[in-house]
Image 1: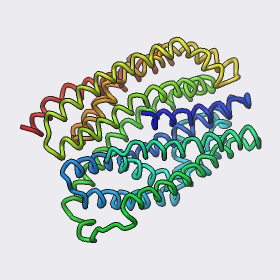
Image 2: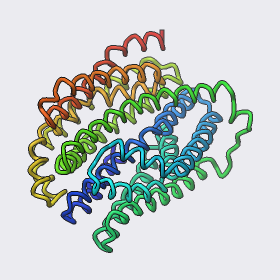
Image 3: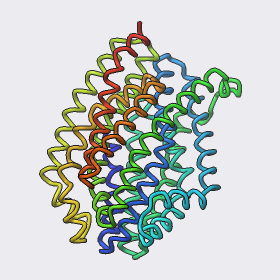
Image 4: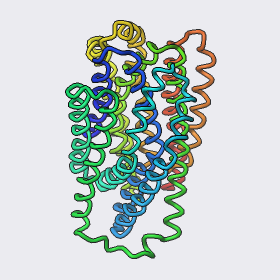
Length: 418
């Protein structure tokens, strides 16, 4: 959780640094591009989630050779995906920003940021693997240190380049590339030392057909599930962009609140991935049930506390993030809806971690698609309420994800443990 809590402040610092320039179009451009990167990298989140689950299950089963193989397989996939993104950079940028439909000024700023920051892709994806491998072994102290290195470097470099050297949007993008590269270098050194300076793995073990097919099936389901979630966030951003630059910028400011709340809950989800995965590998139903119970209880505690915090301190935080009077006024109008995000998302985040750790990826995929259908239906019904209706539909989406997974949970436990 401590590792995750440093991450949302990246968005806060970048948004604040650009927001202090007092130009809504620049703020909107960074906001739009940041959401694009969040969603694009999120699409490949299976590199982290699948690595956590498979590493934890191998640890629970006492299979140390497979723990090494999981790391190498995932790093190879990360390298291939990162290089592919760089190859298709131009058509990808054109397609994405045409789809989002922002104003010409906002889109131009967003594309400038995108062109630079995309060079961080290979490092970002490899860092997903390294962090997932560490969390899968419950080496969360080391994972925390690496995450702090990446995030603090990003924040410090962003502040220096944007506010100190007045490098604008380009400075914020360069800072991300530098930080992710530094994080990968540190993580590679740590992993190599943990492996004793050698891999000790044969080609046959690395490319074991059954294990490769299982990894690919899990990753496929997680990727489809994540694509459905990305569609929900893209839709939210696109509708905000069509409502005008001020609405887009205000939603970007409030999105930082959702990120802060989600990373409290995602810390618990990460714990569920490791604990549930290890229990699955060891065939320990009692340990599995205990992990689920504790994650849900603490999830509601943190979700309610975060919602209360935003309700009390949200308005002053908005003023810190942006100096634009128009954006401040718009953001305050929708603050109460953003504050409800953490408490509405408790079950969704907790059960995501449980399903990933147990590798119930097919059911998680199907339930996410059903939740997306509920989201679009809710938005269609709430259209007359404008941006308020958009926020309301998003909260319904969070609730639907958690409730559907909770309803399916007991059947999956019976099927897994008998």
